[in-house]
Amino acid sequence: MTELATEGVEYFSADNREVRREGLTYTVDTLATFPDDEELWLILGSDAARGLFTWERSAEVLDRARIAVLPRPGVDPQEVEDAIGTVLWLDMTPMAISGTDIRHRVGSGVGYRFMVTEAVYEYIETERLYRLARA
Image (cartoon, rainbow, N blue to C red; front, side, top):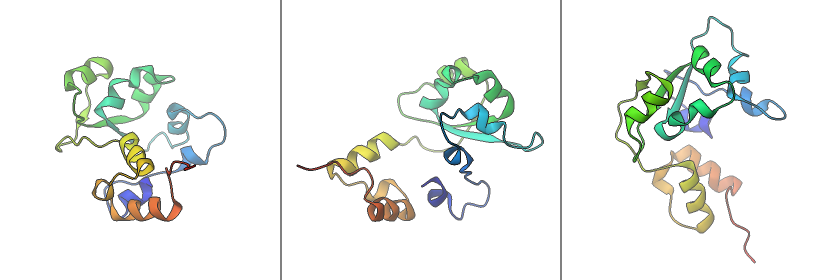
């Protein structure tokens, strides 16, 4: 879905090598599969970035990739920088949309149409993702 959501955005690309790996995966191990001279960016919501220090071998993640952060409602930017250091803040209006919320809305039959791109919406609908089993 990330590939669908970023389709046509020329200045970055989604890479699926982490989902292709089998077994337990950690971001630090995925980052290690890229050439050392390749500049890597992790784009995270500020809620995820604030907790990055709890990730497996987080110091190595921070050494290997630059961090770009999307502001999220209810997260103080200073908390993020206190937790992981200086980051690049992406200039956008915080949106109270999360993957968890979208999955809940789909499963509950609540509208989500304009919370995702057209391509992602079509994929969720075609694959019937996140539907709750009905008795």
